[in-house]
Amino acid sequence: MSRQALGKGLDALLKQTREMVENPVSAIQGSGNQVAKIAVSKIVPNRFQPRRVFNDEKLAELAQSIKEHGLTQPIVVVYDAGLDKYEIVVGERRFRASQLAGLTEIDAIIHKHLDDKQMCALALIENIQREDLNPIETALGYKSLMSKFYVTQTELAAYCGKSKAAVSNSLRLLELPEEMQQALQDGVITEGHGKALLMVTDAAKRTALFAKLQKNKMSVRQAEDAARALMVPAGKPSKAAKPVEITAFESDLQTALGTKVEVKCGKNPKKGTLVIHYHSLDELDNIAGRLKNKLL
Image (cartoon, rainbow, N blue to C red; front, side):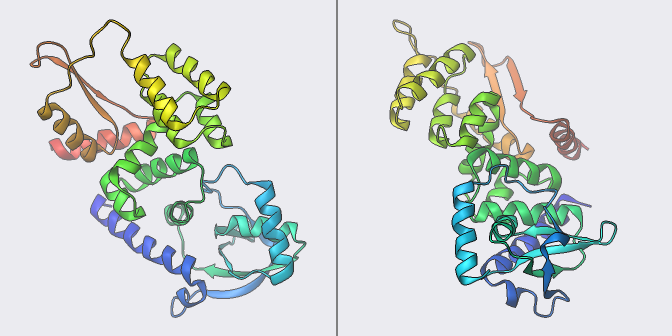
């Protein structure tokens, strides 16, 4: 399937997801889907759920609300004949809260004919649009969508209603060491702190700044100032900025390949190194496919 066709498919899924999130009952009219009460014991989580952290306190609050007012919005499921179970597409948080509330059955929209890619896209986009994920979950969601649907950062930004810079900055968080990514997931530091850490390229200095900003409870602005100080050692001039042409080339190539690209050149701009970043073998295959399409 062509990238253009996949993009159009994602467009349709995005529209469908918005309808499900904003008005789930009207979204099923004329679609062949149905609303039904399903036993909680017959429901299983989404295999492609991007959310890794479920806040126990907020789940308890939602469970109490469900006890008092009922479930105001159905979850969305698809029937798995092999397991004889209903797999959640959208609404796992509501499902978990309903379990806590002691419900034995739950209202659900039973969706027809969803393949794995569609289920993945629906789950990811629904969470991203709700801004209900932590920064690392969001970045992994973007990465997964790009890998599965072969879309660029620019296309993904348009699909998710974000700026290209927001998507690019989010994906860069995955370049942080595991310890720092975990701190972002746990809410110990914010996305702004993560961006400040990325400013420091030396691993030892970055680790030291990470420890310092936690110990001193630094604001994002303070972390950025500290990062800038580490980037330019005392008594040494800062490196000259890259030529505009090089910066523009990096931006164009990043858009074409859907990943971070760096051009490293010395005093002689006619010679240098082109660095293309990837975070998994699947993403490397994706980049290789894009390069072949451009060259052939």
